[in-house]
Image (cartoon, rainbow, N blue to C red; front, side, top):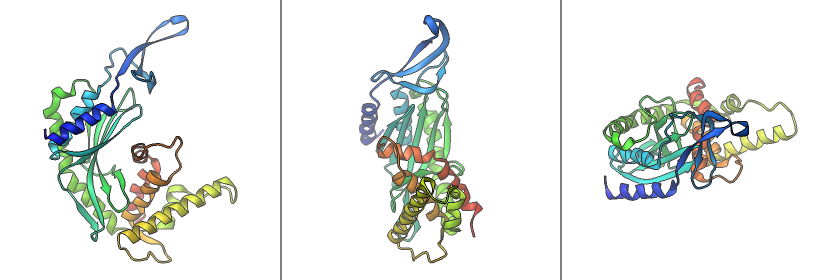
Length: 295
């Protein structure tokens, strides 16, 4: 483990400086039940949407650190991390080794990012997903239809005892970086009609006036502003009156809108926005439609 990865580990430990404890749940009049709840040690907040069984063992910050260290081992170290907690631990990892891939010219490039999801309760198993950071728009996302871009990790405590297995899993993700780059190059080669693309994702407003129409119009205008700004930033020509763009541009316009521009309650952090965008159904649909709607 290199020195920087050790420092990153301390950052993660400080950000997740609390425990998630399991306590029995009671029925009316203190009636005992077989159900347990998960609670944060610092705030007492309830974690997860469902109860767990008596056999359930909550994972710890040390388990999350084991995943971060395994990623650093496979990718030549960790340059930086971003963290978020929402019913589980989420960590975005920036590898130190240079893996830059040019998608268009010299101003539209992607770099690998690893997303670790470690949810609690019945929200799923641990997973590590290889994604990308696009410098032209500062989008950070994942592609769900890329072979070798995700591994599932058995949800258990004591992950440090399985470091060899974890390093092997993350090594497979490193090999998947070329697959991801190939998929993105394929998206750049495809062409879609942006107006039809937006309609397929968001539909048309039911009312011809009122709030629904206003929301639809404002969203469409925001997406087109983002699209035009990114075309200018990457040195692409004007899209013309037919609004035909590459599938890569179309996907990033939707993903970027959801990550950066969409209204969110509670003024979420940048990392919280990244996590929500990665699980957004419209972003996932946009990825599929690039291939279905190519002209």
